[in-house]
Length: 503
Image 1 (cartoon, rainbow, N blue to C red):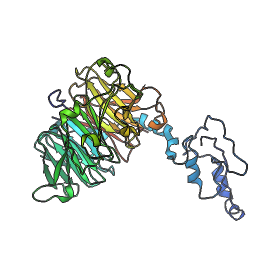
Image 2: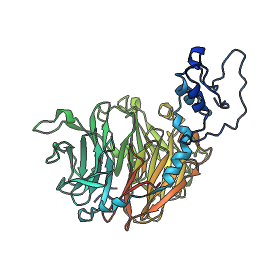
Image 3: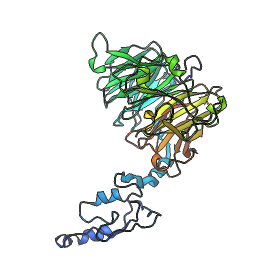
């Protein structure tokens, strides 16, 4: 059953000058009304505070990068360049954090979402929106997949007996094709245009299949399960005899597997507290790596800042990130798939083991997000680890961990033994975390800033933006809409709740 943890068995900077764009004399005569309108304050644009730093000196004859636009077509360029301290290549939406924070703080359950009840279908293990946000799919404990219109909260379709056991995960390949996986050891492909039957059913795992990824570079479907196997599937070559597939990787106690947005890395979490990273990923080459040798590779205790620890004692090994890299030329692996084995630092859990139950990646590939619990199930944390570039090429004699713990928060230890799937917002500024009988919106700072703008010198606590309690049972999964300011959550008793800003 998805949700149940298996335990040990399986388990530039400058000021903004107000002014009008300079126009030629032929343009001025035709734009007096436009000038008057441009000077008039507008209510639909939020004011932007000028930067606190002093004005930069500008050399004579050189225009200030922050002065008002000089041609009628340069307004957008001016808006881009006026972002404080981040240069030209910055999304101007960064100035709108006040608006976004206000929207998310006003999130409330949608009244119509009370109709999204799946009580007859068992617990909700996974939620997934289509890329265009038009369909919300629900993976249910009792073999079924439900489809809803997230805007109207209308039920569209129920895929009865989608599998023969619990449906664990759903993944869209595009706006019409999606895949589901199950405890019945199979993966199924579906087409939104023809939901009366499966496109195909994939067989290859020997135990429960827990999650699905899709490599947009090779167009390979990638699945992982509690048999410890990561399998790739060439769905474009499916025939009546089956789908070409091969075992790409194997490790003990595999829990979750994810690909970075650019598909350059694969991350794997285990119930024994290890986090594996395959750098410069090449899914076309299988890795014949013995799991025992890999997980028992030499580990070097590291401090939180990635430096070598002076102590080699067992207790010191728990005070930082344990790192080991298996180098391709030394171990006979593909040059494209260098393997790093980490024991992530967990606040408050330095003297005990932990189980990494949920694993997600920042939508821009900047960080990884994990939910972990102690081996005794008496504490839970949500942790954010920033990717540190250049780490994979460091020699083994002077290791540096690829991940650095930047933010964390302790979670409500409710619903012990169940996996709680958290998620990033589409812009990566917010985290939605299952929190008891509700959800909690978390940010890196009080302004819902970008992770790159608020990286702390030392590990800091995630900031709570809002907590919403709308379920009568433990929340197991959450998901942001990719296109709308909407959030969905599903709980153990089978209810799905939708949240939108309240105006």
